[in-house]
Image (cartoon, rainbow, N blue to C red; front, side, top):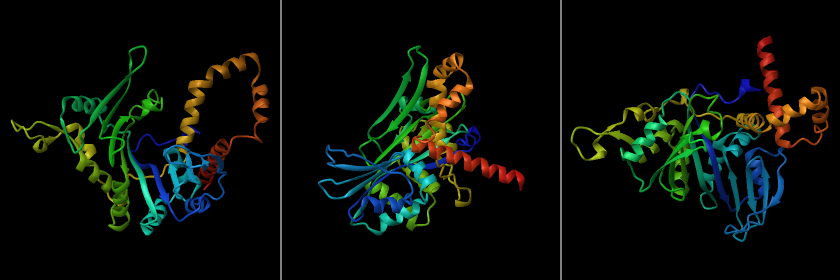
Length: 335
């Protein structure tokens, strides 16, 4: 399965969160809009807090909230939900964006996250953190924060740098994704720079993408460079806005590409395989080792075979994905 897990060689841009409200569609209309009619959405309890939703249809980190006192439907797709949409729905974000833009009075985008995953060393998280603490940056935000998490052994665990407020229309976070996923021993460098766009800013992003013939790559860096850049002092000039771009930030912040060489990808459920492997290897290895010492591999296979019929849908989908991938590889090898 490791053969088709997320490609750690090539930098990429992905959509990592999408949410919108809808005054005209039913929850089942939304499922059809996503092209996920064959997915086993489950009815679960709603959020009865400030949103007031009584009901929710849920599948693989996609929530469709409804039956609220305001009458609209709220669609929420986290990062894993975006991966499920890409793999199990039609995966065409333009179709969703066109629906939002075509119904401006009734459909409102509330959040869109765009993430840049760096595997090639463009983003130096140590220098970014140091320059943030020293004030060697210019931004249009009032707030900036560096978080250095530490293990009990006092070994540094990870660094996260944020600009802006999570409640504002734009929020930027740069952090060590390999550490967050507990994969730093296997992935030499995985730093993510993500932008969280809300309300008007999210709407403007998709409008430019859909109506002005812009690429996601170009838009990503236009927004980023407008709101943030790291700098190094130029002579005796005290105006930071006139300072040169810091050398460690330059290669990344100017990585604008053409559509034919776009960094934007839809990575599908590869993140699921990564999460599954990480959980088994880091949390279950001791249980499996002890069981095998007490029993045989045949006994283990016999026990697990009993769960085939009642396997969780997300695991069935992951196995189906793996089977299809191996069949495709076999076909290519025979061709």
